[in-house]
Image 1: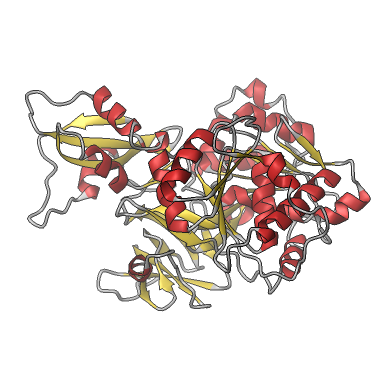
Image 2: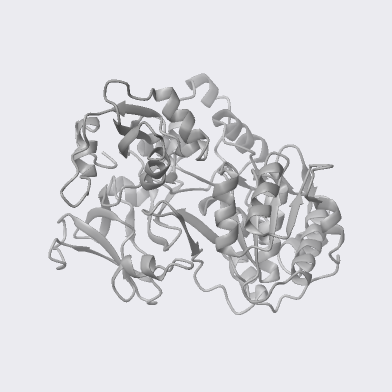
Amino acid sequence: MALGTGAKAATDPSGVALTDGSRTLAWAEVDEALNRATNALIDADAGPDSRVAVYARNSTEVVIVHSAAVRAGVSSVPINAALTAGELAYILADSGAHTVFCGPETVDVAVEAAWAAGVVTVVAWRSAGAGGAEDWERWLSKGSPTEPPTDRAPRLHLMYTSGTTGRPKGTDLVFGNPGASVADYLARHAGQVPAAGAGPHLVVGPLHHTGPLIGLRYLSAGQTVVVLPRFDAEAVLAAIDRWRVSTTLMVPTHFTRLLALPEEVRRRYDVSSMRVVYHTGAACPIPVKRRMIEWFGPVLLEAYGASESGTVCQITSEEWLAHPGSVGRALPNFEALVLDDDGERAPAGTEGRLYFVDKTLRGIRYHNDPDASAAAHVAPGVFTIGEVGYVDEDGYVFITDRSTDMVVSGGVNIYPAEVEAALSLHPGVRDVACIGVPNADLGEEVKALVQPVDPAAPPSTDELVAFCRDRLAGYKVPKSVEIVDELGRTAMGKLDKRRLRAPYWPTGRTIGG
Protein backbone atom coordinates (compact mmCIF):
# COMPACT_ATOMS: atom_id res chain seq x y z
CA MET A 1 0.00 0.00 0.00
CA ALA A 2 1.15 3.55 -0.61
CA LEU A 3 0.89 4.40 3.08
CA GLY A 4 1.80 2.60 6.29
CA THR A 5 2.44 -1.03 5.44
CA GLY A 6 3.65 -0.15 1.95
CA ALA A 7 6.20 2.31 3.30
CA LYS A 8 7.47 -0.27 5.78
CA ALA A 9 7.65 -2.89 3.04
CA ALA A 10 9.83 -0.52 1.03
CA THR A 11 12.18 0.42 3.90
CA ASP A 12 12.19 -2.78 5.98
CA PRO A 13 10.85 -5.60 3.75
CA SER A 14 12.15 -8.48 5.91
CA GLY A 15 11.23 -6.94 9.26
CA VAL A 16 8.50 -8.61 11.33
CA ALA A 17 5.15 -7.02 10.58
CA LEU A 18 2.57 -9.45 11.95
CA THR A 19 2.78 -12.63 14.00
CA ASP A 20 0.40 -14.91 15.88
CA GLY A 21 3.00 -17.29 17.29
CA SER A 22 2.54 -19.98 14.65
CA ARG A 23 2.85 -17.76 11.58
CA THR A 24 5.06 -14.69 11.16
CA LEU A 25 4.85 -12.33 8.18
CA ALA A 26 7.43 -9.79 7.07
CA TRP A 27 6.38 -6.34 5.85
CA ALA A 28 6.79 -7.32 2.21
CA GLU A 29 4.55 -10.37 2.78
CA VAL A 30 1.88 -8.36 4.57
CA ASP A 31 1.91 -5.73 1.85
CA GLU A 32 1.43 -8.33 -0.88
CA ALA A 33 -1.29 -10.16 1.09
CA LEU A 34 -3.13 -6.88 1.70
CA ASN A 35 -2.88 -5.90 -1.95
CA ARG A 36 -4.18 -9.29 -3.11
CA ALA A 37 -6.98 -9.48 -0.52
CA THR A 38 -8.06 -5.88 -1.16
CA ASN A 39 -8.17 -6.39 -4.93
CA ALA A 40 -10.01 -9.70 -4.54
CA LEU A 41 -12.66 -8.02 -2.37
CA ILE A 42 -13.01 -5.15 -4.85
CA ASP A 43 -13.46 -7.68 -7.68
CA ALA A 44 -16.18 -9.45 -5.66
CA ASP A 45 -17.88 -6.19 -4.67
CA ALA A 46 -21.61 -6.69 -4.19
CA GLY A 47 -22.49 -2.99 -4.30
CA PRO A 48 -22.55 -0.16 -1.75
CA ASP A 49 -23.69 -2.51 1.04
CA SER A 50 -21.08 -5.19 0.32
CA ARG A 51 -20.13 -7.09 3.48
CA VAL A 52 -17.97 -10.03 4.45
CA ALA A 53 -17.99 -11.91 7.75
CA VAL A 54 -15.02 -13.14 9.77
CA TYR A 55 -15.80 -16.12 12.00
CA ALA A 56 -12.49 -17.31 13.40
CA ARG A 57 -10.16 -17.25 16.35
CA ASN A 58 -7.28 -14.79 16.46
CA SER A 59 -4.76 -15.25 13.66
CA THR A 60 -2.72 -13.29 11.15
CA GLU A 61 -5.41 -14.01 8.55
CA VAL A 62 -8.12 -12.37 10.66
CA VAL A 63 -6.06 -9.18 10.75
CA ILE A 64 -5.42 -9.34 6.99
CA VAL A 65 -9.10 -9.80 6.09
CA HIS A 66 -10.37 -6.96 8.28
CA SER A 67 -7.59 -4.64 7.12
CA ALA A 68 -8.20 -5.47 3.46
CA ALA A 69 -11.95 -4.92 3.84
CA VAL A 70 -11.38 -1.35 5.05
CA ARG A 71 -9.11 -0.69 2.07
CA ALA A 72 -11.62 -2.19 -0.35
CA GLY A 73 -14.48 -0.06 0.95
CA VAL A 74 -16.21 -3.23 2.14
CA SER A 75 -17.75 -3.59 5.60
CA SER A 76 -16.48 -6.57 7.56
CA VAL A 77 -18.53 -8.27 10.27
CA PRO A 78 -16.45 -9.66 13.17
CA ILE A 79 -18.23 -12.68 14.68
CA ASN A 80 -17.50 -14.57 17.88
CA ALA A 81 -15.97 -17.94 16.99
CA ALA A 82 -17.88 -19.53 19.90
CA LEU A 83 -21.31 -18.98 18.32
CA THR A 84 -23.35 -21.97 17.23
CA ALA A 85 -24.40 -22.56 13.63
CA GLY A 86 -27.87 -21.18 14.35
CA GLU A 87 -26.53 -18.03 15.99
CA LEU A 88 -24.03 -17.53 13.17
CA ALA A 89 -26.65 -18.08 10.46
CA TYR A 90 -28.84 -15.35 11.93
CA ILE A 91 -26.00 -12.80 11.82
CA LEU A 92 -24.97 -13.81 8.31
CA ALA A 93 -28.52 -13.37 7.05
CA ASP A 94 -29.16 -10.13 8.92
CA SER A 95 -25.88 -8.54 7.83
CA GLY A 96 -26.19 -9.61 4.21
CA ALA A 97 -22.60 -10.87 4.11
CA HIS A 98 -21.73 -12.49 0.78
CA THR A 99 -18.58 -14.27 2.03
CA VAL A 100 -17.59 -15.76 5.38
CA PHE A 101 -13.92 -16.23 6.26
CA CYS A 102 -13.03 -18.87 8.85
CA GLY A 103 -10.23 -20.93 10.35
CA PRO A 104 -9.71 -24.67 10.89
CA GLU A 105 -11.54 -24.61 14.21
CA THR A 106 -14.69 -22.98 12.77
CA VAL A 107 -14.91 -24.17 9.17
CA ASP A 108 -17.48 -26.93 9.72
CA VAL A 109 -19.88 -24.65 11.59
CA ALA A 110 -19.28 -21.86 9.06
CA VAL A 111 -20.20 -24.10 6.14
CA GLU A 112 -23.37 -25.27 7.90
CA ALA A 113 -24.42 -21.72 8.80
CA ALA A 114 -23.55 -20.31 5.39
CA TRP A 115 -25.74 -22.93 3.72
CA ALA A 116 -28.64 -22.04 6.03
CA ALA A 117 -28.19 -18.30 5.49
CA GLY A 118 -27.71 -18.47 1.73
CA VAL A 119 -24.11 -17.22 1.81
CA VAL A 120 -22.39 -18.18 -1.43
CA THR A 121 -18.71 -18.27 -0.48
CA VAL A 122 -16.84 -19.74 2.50
CA VAL A 123 -13.06 -19.21 2.62
CA ALA A 124 -10.98 -21.15 5.16
CA TRP A 125 -7.32 -20.90 6.09
CA ARG A 126 -5.04 -23.65 7.36
CA SER A 127 -7.88 -26.11 6.57
CA ALA A 128 -6.69 -28.21 3.64
CA GLY A 129 -9.48 -30.31 2.19
CA ALA A 130 -12.27 -28.73 4.25
CA GLY A 131 -15.55 -29.65 2.56
CA GLY A 132 -17.55 -26.77 1.15
CA ALA A 133 -14.88 -24.14 1.73
CA GLU A 134 -12.42 -22.50 -0.63
CA ASP A 135 -8.76 -22.53 0.41
CA TRP A 136 -7.47 -19.17 1.66
CA GLU A 137 -4.26 -19.25 -0.37
CA ARG A 138 -6.19 -20.09 -3.52
CA TRP A 139 -8.67 -17.29 -2.86
CA LEU A 140 -5.81 -14.88 -2.16
CA SER A 141 -4.04 -15.80 -5.40
CA LYS A 142 -7.03 -14.54 -7.39
CA GLY A 143 -6.32 -10.97 -6.28
CA SER A 144 -3.79 -8.86 -8.10
CA PRO A 145 -0.57 -8.04 -6.15
CA THR A 146 -0.57 -4.52 -7.63
CA GLU A 147 -1.39 -1.45 -5.56
CA PRO A 148 -5.18 -1.19 -5.19
CA PRO A 149 -6.92 2.17 -5.56
CA THR A 150 -7.10 4.31 -2.41
CA ASP A 151 -9.89 6.62 -3.54
CA ARG A 152 -12.72 4.36 -2.34
CA ALA A 153 -14.69 5.42 0.74
CA PRO A 154 -13.64 3.37 3.81
CA ARG A 155 -16.31 1.36 5.63
CA LEU A 156 -15.55 -0.12 9.01
CA HIS A 157 -17.08 -3.04 10.79
CA LEU A 158 -20.68 -3.97 11.43
CA MET A 159 -20.57 -5.16 15.04
CA TYR A 160 -23.26 -7.36 16.59
CA THR A 161 -24.33 -6.87 20.17
CA SER A 162 -27.19 -8.79 21.79
CA GLY A 163 -30.35 -6.89 22.66
CA THR A 164 -32.94 -7.22 25.38
CA THR A 165 -35.14 -9.13 22.95
CA GLY A 166 -32.49 -11.85 22.90
CA ARG A 167 -31.65 -11.30 19.21
CA PRO A 168 -28.29 -9.74 18.31
CA LYS A 169 -28.43 -6.19 16.93
CA GLY A 170 -25.97 -4.89 14.38
CA THR A 171 -24.39 -1.48 14.73
CA ASP A 172 -21.89 0.25 12.49
CA LEU A 173 -18.70 0.77 14.44
CA VAL A 174 -18.24 4.45 15.21
CA PHE A 175 -14.85 5.67 14.10
CA GLY A 176 -15.10 9.44 13.99
CA ASN A 177 -14.29 11.19 10.75
CA PRO A 178 -12.64 8.59 8.50
CA GLY A 179 -12.14 10.99 5.62
CA ALA A 180 -13.53 10.74 2.14
CA SER A 181 -11.13 8.05 0.97
CA VAL A 182 -9.03 5.11 2.10
CA ALA A 183 -5.96 7.33 1.65
CA ASP A 184 -7.45 9.87 4.10
CA TYR A 185 -8.28 7.10 6.56
CA LEU A 186 -4.78 5.60 6.52
CA ALA A 187 -3.12 9.01 6.82
CA ARG A 188 -5.31 9.94 9.80
CA HIS A 189 -4.47 6.78 11.73
CA ALA A 190 -0.79 7.08 10.90
CA GLY A 191 -0.81 10.29 12.93
CA GLN A 192 -2.52 8.68 15.94
CA VAL A 193 -0.09 5.86 16.72
CA PRO A 194 2.98 6.32 18.93
CA ALA A 195 5.94 8.30 17.65
CA ALA A 196 8.57 6.65 15.47
CA GLY A 197 10.65 4.15 17.35
CA ALA A 198 7.84 2.89 19.60
CA GLY A 199 7.55 -0.86 20.03
CA PRO A 200 4.94 -3.28 18.70
CA HIS A 201 1.27 -3.41 19.53
CA LEU A 202 0.01 -6.53 21.35
CA VAL A 203 -3.46 -8.00 20.75
CA VAL A 204 -4.57 -10.05 23.77
CA GLY A 205 -8.36 -10.07 23.34
CA PRO A 206 -10.51 -11.75 20.67
CA LEU A 207 -10.67 -9.82 17.41
CA HIS A 208 -14.45 -10.04 17.22
CA HIS A 209 -14.59 -7.31 19.90
CA THR A 210 -14.38 -3.60 19.17
CA GLY A 211 -11.38 -2.87 21.41
CA PRO A 212 -8.83 -5.40 20.10
CA LEU A 213 -9.58 -4.25 16.55
CA ILE A 214 -7.50 -1.11 17.21
CA GLY A 215 -4.57 -3.36 16.29
CA LEU A 216 -5.59 -2.83 12.65
CA ARG A 217 -4.76 0.86 12.99
CA TYR A 218 -1.28 0.13 14.28
CA LEU A 219 -0.57 -2.24 11.42
CA SER A 220 -1.91 0.30 8.91
CA ALA A 221 0.50 2.89 10.29
CA GLY A 222 3.50 0.59 10.01
CA GLN A 223 3.68 -0.72 13.59
CA THR A 224 4.47 -4.40 14.22
CA VAL A 225 1.43 -6.24 15.58
CA VAL A 226 1.76 -9.32 17.81
CA VAL A 227 -1.47 -11.36 18.07
CA LEU A 228 -2.02 -13.85 20.87
CA PRO A 229 -4.38 -16.69 19.85
CA ARG A 230 -5.97 -16.49 23.30
CA PHE A 231 -5.36 -14.73 26.59
CA ASP A 232 -2.87 -16.37 28.91
CA ALA A 233 -1.54 -14.18 31.71
CA GLU A 234 2.06 -15.35 31.65
CA ALA A 235 2.10 -15.48 27.84
CA VAL A 236 1.08 -11.79 27.83
CA LEU A 237 4.02 -10.86 30.05
CA ALA A 238 6.37 -13.01 27.99
CA ALA A 239 5.23 -11.29 24.78
CA ILE A 240 5.68 -7.83 26.28
CA ASP A 241 9.18 -8.77 27.41
CA ARG A 242 10.24 -10.53 24.20
CA TRP A 243 8.87 -8.00 21.70
CA ARG A 244 9.32 -4.86 23.84
CA VAL A 245 5.64 -4.11 23.36
CA SER A 246 4.60 -0.48 23.81
CA THR A 247 0.80 -0.59 23.44
CA THR A 248 -2.03 -3.02 24.11
CA LEU A 249 -5.69 -3.11 25.09
CA MET A 250 -7.09 -5.13 27.98
CA VAL A 251 -10.26 -5.54 30.03
CA PRO A 252 -10.37 -5.68 33.85
CA THR A 253 -10.52 -9.49 33.87
CA HIS A 254 -7.13 -9.49 32.17
CA PHE A 255 -5.83 -7.29 34.97
CA THR A 256 -7.10 -9.61 37.70
CA ARG A 257 -5.52 -12.63 36.01
CA LEU A 258 -2.19 -10.86 35.61
CA LEU A 259 -2.25 -9.80 39.26
CA ALA A 260 -3.14 -13.36 40.31
CA LEU A 261 0.19 -14.65 38.99
CA PRO A 262 2.75 -15.46 41.71
CA GLU A 263 5.06 -12.57 42.51
CA GLU A 264 8.11 -14.47 41.27
CA VAL A 265 6.43 -15.01 37.88
CA ARG A 266 5.51 -11.34 37.53
CA ARG A 267 9.05 -10.24 38.37
CA ARG A 268 10.47 -12.56 35.74
CA TYR A 269 9.29 -10.30 32.90
CA ASP A 270 10.21 -6.72 32.05
CA VAL A 271 7.17 -4.54 31.27
CA SER A 272 9.00 -1.22 31.27
CA SER A 273 8.54 -0.87 27.49
CA MET A 274 4.80 -0.24 27.91
CA ARG A 275 3.67 3.26 26.97
CA VAL A 276 -0.13 2.90 26.80
CA VAL A 277 -2.45 0.20 28.13
CA TYR A 278 -5.92 1.01 26.90
CA HIS A 279 -8.65 -0.58 28.95
CA THR A 280 -12.37 -0.87 28.42
CA GLY A 281 -15.15 -3.48 28.34
CA ALA A 282 -16.31 -3.39 31.97
CA ALA A 283 -15.98 -1.49 35.22
CA CYS A 284 -12.58 -1.94 36.84
CA PRO A 285 -12.55 -2.35 40.64
CA ILE A 286 -10.57 0.45 42.28
CA PRO A 287 -8.05 -1.82 44.07
CA VAL A 288 -7.33 -3.73 40.85
CA LYS A 289 -6.67 -0.60 38.81
CA ARG A 290 -4.51 0.93 41.53
CA ARG A 291 -2.32 -2.19 41.66
CA MET A 292 -1.95 -2.23 37.88
CA ILE A 293 -0.80 1.39 37.87
CA GLU A 294 1.69 0.62 40.65
CA TRP A 295 3.06 -2.27 38.58
CA PHE A 296 2.99 -0.97 34.98
CA GLY A 297 3.26 2.71 35.83
CA PRO A 298 0.80 5.52 34.96
CA VAL A 299 0.22 4.13 31.45
CA LEU A 300 -3.40 2.99 31.79
CA LEU A 301 -5.82 4.93 29.60
CA GLU A 302 -9.48 4.05 30.20
CA ALA A 303 -12.05 4.42 27.44
CA TYR A 304 -15.74 4.27 28.36
CA GLY A 305 -18.47 3.77 25.79
CA ALA A 306 -20.02 1.04 23.65
CA SER A 307 -19.83 -0.36 20.15
CA GLU A 308 -22.99 1.59 19.38
CA SER A 309 -21.61 4.94 20.48
CA GLY A 310 -17.86 4.65 20.31
CA THR A 311 -15.80 6.09 23.16
CA VAL A 312 -17.71 8.82 25.01
CA CYS A 313 -15.45 9.30 28.06
CA GLN A 314 -11.74 8.89 28.67
CA ILE A 315 -9.42 9.16 31.66
CA THR A 316 -5.66 8.97 32.11
CA SER A 317 -3.92 7.25 35.02
CA GLU A 318 -2.99 10.59 36.58
CA GLU A 319 -6.58 11.83 36.38
CA TRP A 320 -7.90 8.57 37.77
CA LEU A 321 -5.57 8.69 40.78
CA ALA A 322 -7.10 12.08 41.57
CA HIS A 323 -10.66 10.83 40.84
CA PRO A 324 -10.58 7.09 41.68
CA GLY A 325 -13.50 5.15 40.29
CA SER A 326 -14.31 7.64 37.54
CA VAL A 327 -14.50 6.65 33.88
CA GLY A 328 -13.39 10.14 32.90
CA ARG A 329 -14.85 13.23 31.35
CA ALA A 330 -16.87 13.35 28.15
CA LEU A 331 -14.85 13.70 24.95
CA PRO A 332 -15.21 16.96 22.98
CA ASN A 333 -18.00 15.66 20.73
CA PHE A 334 -20.10 14.60 23.72
CA GLU A 335 -21.68 16.03 26.84
CA ALA A 336 -22.58 13.85 29.83
CA LEU A 337 -25.81 14.51 31.70
CA VAL A 338 -27.94 12.76 34.28
CA LEU A 339 -31.74 12.73 34.16
CA ASP A 340 -33.94 12.09 37.18
CA ASP A 341 -37.12 9.99 37.21
CA ASP A 342 -39.09 12.93 35.81
CA GLY A 343 -36.72 13.36 32.89
CA GLU A 344 -35.26 16.54 34.31
CA ARG A 345 -31.55 17.29 34.40
CA ALA A 346 -30.13 16.35 37.80
CA PRO A 347 -27.58 18.54 39.58
CA ALA A 348 -23.90 17.56 39.88
CA GLY A 349 -23.31 14.63 42.22
CA THR A 350 -26.88 13.31 41.93
CA GLU A 351 -27.36 9.73 40.78
CA GLY A 352 -29.72 9.03 37.91
CA ARG A 353 -30.00 7.64 34.38
CA LEU A 354 -26.84 8.57 32.48
CA TYR A 355 -27.21 10.12 29.02
CA PHE A 356 -24.83 11.58 26.48
CA VAL A 357 -25.45 14.38 24.04
CA ASP A 358 -23.81 13.61 20.70
CA LYS A 359 -23.01 17.04 19.27
CA THR A 360 -22.90 15.53 15.77
CA LEU A 361 -26.52 14.36 16.31
CA ARG A 362 -25.62 10.86 15.11
CA GLY A 363 -26.47 9.14 18.38
CA ILE A 364 -26.95 5.38 18.24
CA ARG A 365 -28.08 3.48 15.16
CA TYR A 366 -28.89 -0.21 14.96
CA HIS A 367 -28.79 -2.08 11.65
CA ASN A 368 -32.28 -3.07 10.44
CA ASP A 369 -33.81 -2.00 13.80
CA PRO A 370 -35.21 1.57 13.82
CA ASP A 371 -37.30 0.83 16.91
CA ALA A 372 -34.23 -0.09 18.98
CA SER A 373 -32.42 2.98 17.64
CA ALA A 374 -35.30 5.24 18.70
CA ALA A 375 -35.61 3.58 22.13
CA ALA A 376 -32.02 4.51 23.02
CA HIS A 377 -32.77 8.24 22.68
CA VAL A 378 -34.79 10.84 24.59
CA ALA A 379 -34.11 13.50 21.96
CA PRO A 380 -32.18 13.63 18.67
CA GLY A 381 -28.58 12.76 19.46
CA VAL A 382 -29.27 12.31 23.20
CA PHE A 383 -28.80 8.64 24.06
CA THR A 384 -28.15 6.22 26.89
CA ILE A 385 -26.12 3.04 26.93
CA GLY A 386 -28.23 1.83 29.82
CA GLU A 387 -26.33 2.82 32.94
CA VAL A 388 -26.93 4.74 36.14
CA GLY A 389 -24.38 7.15 37.56
CA TYR A 390 -23.53 10.74 38.38
CA VAL A 391 -21.32 13.57 37.14
CA ASP A 392 -19.27 15.47 39.72
CA GLU A 393 -18.61 19.22 39.83
CA ASP A 394 -15.51 18.81 37.66
CA GLY A 395 -17.37 16.89 34.95
CA TYR A 396 -16.00 13.45 35.85
CA VAL A 397 -18.46 10.61 35.23
CA PHE A 398 -18.98 7.81 37.77
CA ILE A 399 -20.97 4.65 37.00
CA THR A 400 -22.89 3.17 39.92
CA ASP A 401 -25.20 0.59 38.33
CA ARG A 402 -26.75 -0.57 35.10
CA SER A 403 -30.34 0.13 34.28
CA THR A 404 -30.37 -2.67 31.73
CA ASP A 405 -30.26 -6.37 32.55
CA MET A 406 -26.97 -6.90 30.77
CA VAL A 407 -24.31 -9.04 32.44
CA VAL A 408 -20.68 -8.14 31.71
CA SER A 409 -18.55 -11.23 32.26
CA GLY A 410 -14.84 -10.87 31.57
CA GLY A 411 -15.53 -7.83 29.41
CA VAL A 412 -18.08 -9.74 27.30
CA ASN A 413 -21.70 -8.57 27.15
CA ILE A 414 -24.29 -11.26 27.88
CA TYR A 415 -27.96 -10.42 27.66
CA PRO A 416 -30.13 -12.55 29.99
CA ALA A 417 -33.13 -12.47 27.66
CA GLU A 418 -31.34 -14.69 25.16
CA VAL A 419 -30.42 -17.23 27.87
CA GLU A 420 -33.92 -17.09 29.31
CA ALA A 421 -35.40 -17.76 25.88
CA ALA A 422 -33.28 -20.89 25.53
CA LEU A 423 -34.11 -22.24 29.00
CA SER A 424 -37.82 -21.56 28.58
CA LEU A 425 -37.88 -24.22 25.86
CA HIS A 426 -37.04 -26.94 28.39
CA PRO A 427 -40.19 -28.96 29.18
CA GLY A 428 -39.41 -28.93 32.89
CA VAL A 429 -39.14 -25.12 33.16
CA ARG A 430 -42.25 -23.08 33.99
CA ASP A 431 -40.50 -19.72 34.37
CA VAL A 432 -36.91 -18.46 34.42
CA ALA A 433 -34.91 -15.33 35.16
CA CYS A 434 -31.20 -14.91 34.55
CA ILE A 435 -29.15 -12.40 36.52
CA GLY A 436 -25.56 -11.39 37.02
CA VAL A 437 -23.91 -12.49 40.26
CA PRO A 438 -20.37 -11.81 41.55
CA ASN A 439 -17.38 -13.69 40.12
CA ALA A 440 -13.95 -12.83 41.53
CA ASP A 441 -12.21 -13.47 38.21
CA LEU A 442 -14.76 -12.38 35.58
CA GLY A 443 -16.50 -9.64 37.55
CA GLU A 444 -19.90 -11.23 36.95
CA GLU A 445 -21.32 -14.55 35.83
CA VAL A 446 -24.77 -15.64 34.70
CA LYS A 447 -27.02 -17.35 37.24
CA ALA A 448 -30.36 -18.88 36.23
CA LEU A 449 -33.26 -18.80 38.67
CA VAL A 450 -35.66 -21.53 37.53
CA GLN A 451 -39.26 -22.15 38.58
CA PRO A 452 -39.94 -25.79 37.65
CA VAL A 453 -43.12 -27.24 36.23
CA ASP A 454 -43.04 -29.93 38.94
CA PRO A 455 -41.52 -28.61 42.19
CA ALA A 456 -41.30 -32.16 43.51
CA ALA A 457 -39.13 -33.30 40.59
CA PRO A 458 -37.29 -30.31 39.13
CA PRO A 459 -34.77 -30.75 36.32
CA SER A 460 -31.20 -31.05 37.53
CA THR A 461 -28.57 -28.33 37.14
CA ASP A 462 -26.52 -30.55 34.83
CA GLU A 463 -29.54 -31.20 32.64
CA LEU A 464 -30.37 -27.50 32.31
CA VAL A 465 -26.77 -26.49 31.63
CA ALA A 466 -26.46 -29.20 28.96
CA PHE A 467 -29.74 -27.99 27.44
CA CYS A 468 -28.27 -24.49 27.16
CA ARG A 469 -24.98 -25.70 25.70
CA ASP A 470 -26.86 -27.26 22.78
CA ARG A 471 -28.44 -23.89 21.95
CA LEU A 472 -26.02 -21.17 23.03
CA ALA A 473 -22.36 -20.25 22.77
CA GLY A 474 -20.43 -21.51 25.79
CA TYR A 475 -19.81 -18.10 27.33
CA LYS A 476 -23.58 -17.46 27.55
CA VAL A 477 -24.37 -20.69 29.42
CA PRO A 478 -25.27 -20.10 33.10
CA LYS A 479 -22.48 -20.89 35.54
CA SER A 480 -25.05 -21.84 38.18
CA VAL A 481 -28.74 -22.72 38.40
CA GLU A 482 -31.00 -22.29 41.42
CA ILE A 483 -34.49 -23.81 41.70
CA VAL A 484 -36.98 -21.33 43.19
CA ASP A 485 -40.64 -21.46 44.17
CA GLU A 486 -41.57 -18.31 42.23
CA LEU A 487 -39.95 -15.26 40.63
CA GLY A 488 -42.33 -12.58 41.80
CA ARG A 489 -43.63 -11.33 38.48
CA THR A 490 -46.02 -8.37 38.56
CA ALA A 491 -49.57 -8.45 37.22
CA MET A 492 -48.11 -7.17 33.95
CA GLY A 493 -45.65 -10.06 33.87
CA LYS A 494 -42.58 -7.94 34.65
CA LEU A 495 -39.64 -8.99 36.78
CA ASP A 496 -37.80 -6.82 39.26
CA LYS A 497 -34.26 -7.88 38.38
CA ARG A 498 -32.77 -5.54 40.96
CA ARG A 499 -34.70 -7.35 43.70
CA LEU A 500 -33.66 -10.73 42.35
CA ARG A 501 -30.00 -9.70 42.29
CA ALA A 502 -29.96 -8.15 45.75
CA PRO A 503 -29.33 -11.34 47.82
CA TYR A 504 -26.21 -12.10 45.79
CA TRP A 505 -24.77 -8.58 46.09
CA PRO A 506 -24.91 -8.07 49.87
CA THR A 507 -23.04 -4.74 49.79
CA GLY A 508 -25.01 -3.39 46.86
CA ARG A 509 -24.29 -3.82 43.18
CA THR A 510 -22.00 -0.82 43.01
CA ILE A 511 -19.35 -0.76 40.38
CA GLY A 512 -15.78 0.19 41.13
CA GLY A 513 -15.74 0.22 44.91
